[in-house]
Length: 151
Picture (cartoon, rainbow, N blue to C red):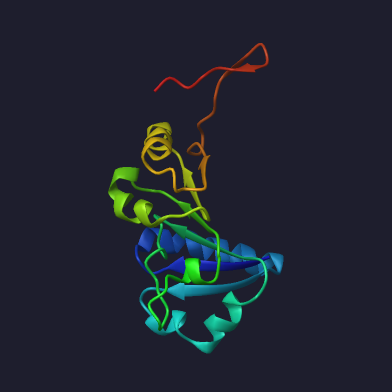
């Protein structure tokens, strides 16, 4: 697998992306980093070579990358058929414009059940919504059965 990491929009997200890059290095995965602070990172020959590899998946926070286009104005995820896995750290409503651009290759990772319902109802264009509770949170089990979350 080859991972396209997207960073440079928010410093907190860069911290986590850098941790994921360290893990990718340690695991021997192929990766490339697109950085909003360095526009040449997504118009270079190295970038073009990377996104033309097989099995490329993109990882970002708050749908960063959905607005990156190449020289001809095409959104890179659409043009190169790259699925995006993006962790929402903000309320989904704050990402509304980017959620409208999402397509059937966009996987959203969230930690808020309200956001999950909001996205399911208003953005059928999103491929998948993956719920990931915040660290330390869990669903209590009683008699081996999960109790529904009360929100």
